Length: 302
Image (cartoon, rainbow, N blue to C red):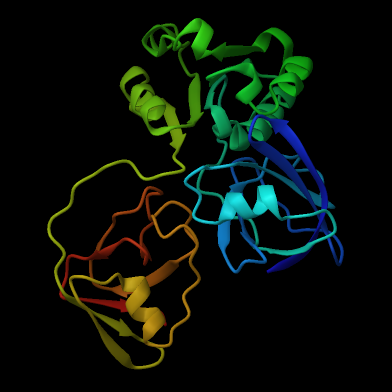
């Protein structure tokens, strides 16, 4: 965990504020485009936000937060109560949405989904390969960093205000995609679903802030064997692996509890996980908040 001080809070669009978090004790941990961090708020909530500043800046992090009128307490606290000078604990950056080398990039962002795309665009443009951004929102006033993007990248950025212009034709963008070009997309679920239909699967990389609706087989009971401590706990049908481990005295870190942020990653030593996350758990890992087991037991490195 890193200690930071809120250095700046400023509005960057309707219902969106930008936070600049300065390292309280020295340089902050390095990060690459696509990374996010956990913010531990003074109201005891932990929330995840994509880093949208300059990866070369080791003195501060920048994030942007949209006020959610159905807030569970995170965005509401930041917008109504957080003040400059407040100390905040911030996790080390994690990156499940890395920018891979490519000869050409098309970036697609919807609303607050611009946050992980911003540093990607900056890095790609600096590498001197062709880049373009299609940035979609209900209105320009609702789209954070729109002026910053137009000023920095000019005609390479296309701003689409859907109330006036309608939705962009993603199928046409897909058919015009040059060979070798890749697409990075982040935004609301319906936009990403449309992107998945429009762009070739092997050339589209997408990040969701909320899990896509999916169905799984009914939950079944299984055992979690904590190998290092020699203890076995039962995970019933109606409880998550994360909750069972927490109640048993294993304080597994957690954030979103939706299989999106990756903070509850555990190492699996034996058994077959049933992956229900949005990230794509690597071999030998499981995200305890949503995933379960296909085998009668999972042996965990706990």
